[in-house]
Amino acid sequence: MFDGLVHPGAILIIGGLSLLGLRGLTRQVFSILIPAAALLVAWKLPLDASWTIGFLDYQLNPIKIDRLSRIFSIIFTLMATVGAIYSLRQSSKLELPAALTYAGSAIGVALAGDWITAFVFWECMAIGSTLVIWSANTSASERAAGRYIMVHLLGGVILFGRNWESREQLT
Image (cartoon, rainbow, N blue to C red; front, side, top):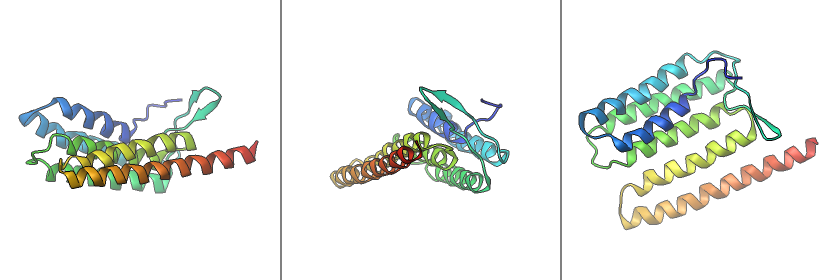
């Protein structure tokens, strides 16, 4: 059920990806508006609200709000807003969209009410953070990004395996 909730992580991810097609002053304005909008949405998240979406035989819960997840959402969106302001004069066109994707995915993990949603956002975090490292466009950053993605994906496999094992014990 949707209940009119907007996912602040989705705002950052979709907004961040849209920055790839923008240039000049328009890009700078949207670079600030996107995380600021996500911050406003995170600030207004109602406690104990949630979404539920049916997928195959599972009930996915992309938003399950409690005090802790709401606080982390606010912190992550605040950091994304400050980071976007800091990056206004940056020459890299990839780093900010990747950073916003990473921040949005981190919010997705914080708000996830089920392990499948948490796993999907976890893997999106791996992609976003790897692209942030890779965006430096040096041979050292390429090697570091390769190592980082392998470690992060291994963490995702461990997360998935641990939760799959827990799921099997419950049935």
